[in-house]
Image (tube, rainbow, N blue to C red):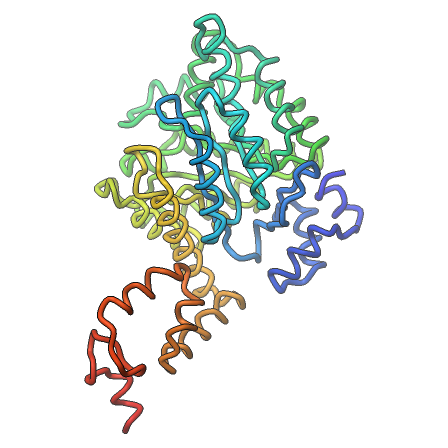
Length: 424
């Protein structure tokens, strides 16, 4: 029985109770919003991760992507990146592996990581089709796709990105559009290529009811992917993006009727002035379903610093209604991130989430701000290091130029404003 099904029966599950405890939030409100589909708790019973509530009224959550590629595959490195991401505050992990050992990496992550784990099953289906008899992505069939989804569900995957909004119609319209970047979603392109080659409808759309059956059986939360998300600022909020969103809104309602948890993925590259409207439109069309955004990235001029661009967009998006931020690392668009980049990406997203949640005066976030303010006032350096998202870097900076007096640092020395004010 799914979390949504239990909630509709008026039953609180251990997962709902843990979310209520960790968020200091009313359990009845959580149950009601899970029943309505406004909160999801990705929790495949086979994996049984630490419960994580995503949605209306809850703190903004952070996802960290990891994963191999055919050009760089090191299972041990991917596991290390997953653990580092969780250590620094990632609420969930998504494995986007496309290398030959992708199944091994996924299973090991599920064993080692105690937070919800997500995947994009079309990657594995496409990669396997390409590996078989020197084939290609277009050689996969419906059985390959749905067998992969069920296999991953049996492995314990808690949530899956499915690009069900990519259809024959939207692909045709995209080709007639004036987009600069076209389609930048890898999963979306897998399906669009398959649709064009086979001249058939996307199975994840035409057989969506079957997808819902699998998701219901394993209580897999569906993350309805934005295959037509903009890949540059100039493409943001265009017709293809909004056409797909309308389809996703219809699929949200179908999922709710089948008692399947689902959330909706959002745009990637969006100018700052368009972010609030994008959040409002999604929440309206998708009837309050949790919104999962990549960034959004607010300038395309920052390769190597896209984690900063994304943190700016993420803070604005979360303040205006996004519930779930997918981190972006400094390596975005350039290479597979290493451990260092994963850590920086998670912390940048944590800053964005904290900025939004404290501005909304959410109790947990605001209390953290008050604790830090008092620690700074009292020159309690150890408390500051403890509260900081990164416990190590501030300590390193403090020790770079140590001073004997505890009530100052080397920035201002004896002319520290706070120190002088206290001595008035």
